Image (tube, rainbow, N blue to C red; front, side, top):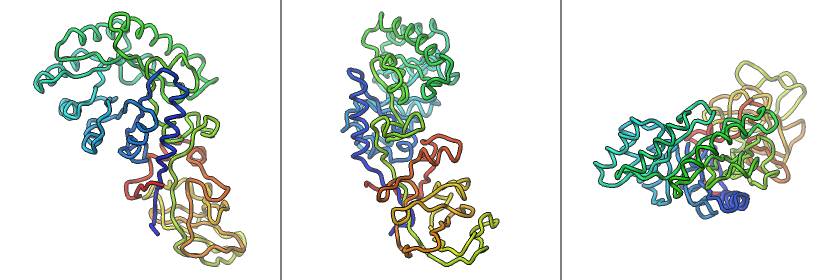
Length: 370
């Protein structure tokens, strides 16, 4: 038995992409596989997403693009993030399409593409209100699209934006609608002159929130992996979580009342009980703040994580009577029997989002197909 293991259900990834395709109708699905597929494994999940109906992929960095190409994945690929000159060369060598929002970078892309002897495909980005990357001036976005289309070393592939509050329906005071209106105007102007350019704005939350946001393509990340974009229950969206995090009981010991477990003695047995020691900890992504707050599954039942989570171990209160034995499986995230602990549950405890949970599962935890 492995000390810590993340099982990834690639069938769930395929099914989630099929679910998204059904929601999108005629729009294309671009599966976002940045950050090692949100902690699930980029290459395997990219293949599964394409099998499930995605026609394009997206990453954040040039190195991520190179990694997919080295694995033999040939689907259209967009690098969403900012690129230095050196990173631009890596992205173009990988055949990735790149994002542009400033004239100086557009010139650099043209120069590097000319040196390579192959046009670069470019997506011009509008900052419609996210306040991060992108050009907030609609006129400049259109001018960049025109400059790109006029340059023989460039191809205008698309125009795009990103929503700030798509995952907060009812609480964003109309900001989502405002961003959508701003983008719709720019996309219409660009496509009026360059109808082959694709317009894309929707993330996973926007796909389910408002069909007006679908445009020609949606870029979906969390939903591909069966994580709920609204941080509630993925089943409400017809999505199936793909990742489970598992370990085992390395020891089971009897605790008298008052015996403590872990650093700082943050938990002491309130009565005589059995305690299991699980060889997984914050070095694997089980955050320290989960101690005395989260639960794990042992024998198909929820058992509280007690004491301070350490780098390599956590302890579980198994109760006054238990049939658990050393070697038994422990599920930290996922299903065991009729019970399930979801990433959304950890996220609520930690005051964060479900995909920070999965991205936080560290590299020392192997990923294996379920």
